[in-house]
Picture 1 (cartoon, rainbow, N blue to C red):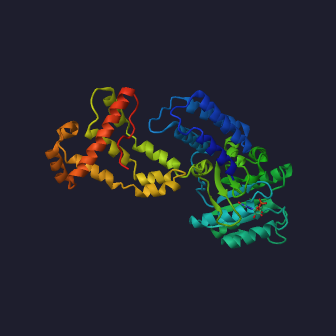
Picture 2 (cartoon, rainbow, N blue to C red):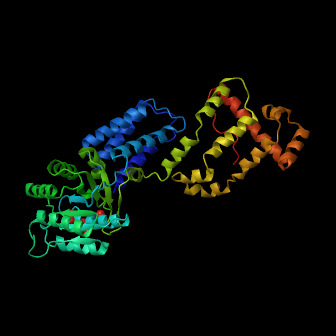
Picture 3 (tube, rainbow, N blue to C red):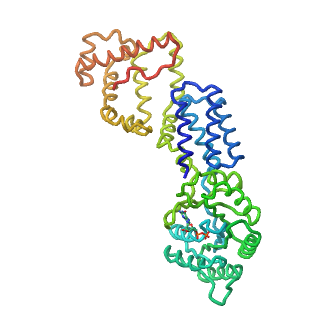
Length: 445
Ligand code: GDP
């Protein structure tokens, strides 16, 4: 699922790499590409419209972000908007004050309701509940038996109609199931209902009758993510016919294009609560919009890298540095120290670089980089007097010997460091006359 959408989005972001600034034409081209990718993934048109409008507005807008380059900013915006259309926060089950909590499953035949009942039962049991599955799908031959087998595998109790007692009347079975739960102290009841191959008035009426009989605390609409564009219409039909509180997406392991998953929340106004991704009982999880978004963006840990860069970026310090640039003051060893501290603040450089996609080839170089080099430079600068740091010119031979002794290094190491600093200072002066922003001059490595 989402493979093609992921590829397309990644390719779009690539075209932005290396750009210092995004022109309106860049934003337009990017938004157009994203729009095409979403439409090709079967995302519903109103969702695509809202999504792309938001991206465009934010990318063009005044969201000046000094910590991120334009390509990173676009990734960040797309990620946040994706999380938004997927529902933002994870919505958890609501339990009734007076047990049992009744959860009713609705959806088309083959959507995965019966399978889900077992998965949900097991999930609830792991959470410390005592669930009961009630077999109200009396339409499909063998559905009751299938639920019994699923329940057994999941280690969860199943209530099924006894031969001769309520056979053929799902509403009666639902009522008996709740009674059974109450008398046997089950605290959550999962009611499996019948579906049809397509939306059908009779099926909808049956679901409504069961709903009215058991008054569920939660109605979950089970949606096969593989049905593509039909998903939206089906979801709307169930919302208007029976109503539901949340959606369960099934078959996310399939190779569908993902449109249903991305559209259903926006179109129905109901959150996706669970996701099923296989036939095994454990292929099931609470739905996390954030995780789904980063899976779609397929950016490895790039997103956490972006977060870290933002956290480490000290706007005040950058402003002070910029002010210094505007003035006639020279770049000093104190500034040099500050810049090293800013880089270190971002966490282990090696780890950071390792998070970037495509960095695997650079592993050797990364491994050769010794972060202790920062310690050594810091120790040397700290062995200098404040005057020496401000006016490195005065550091003559005897001062060098004193500094070397102070930090436990050789004089030639101090010479090296001062040489590097001299280059950095020169670069800064050149940039100042050229008017550019400082990068990280003179970094060892
Ligand atoms: P129901 O008619 O809604 O009760 O649907 P079932 O639970 O009987 O599921 C229909 C078919 O889909 C069965 O063959 C299940 O094994 C399969 N199925 C259910 N959930 C998933 C899933 O998440 N992934 C995959 N690949 N198959 C699933």
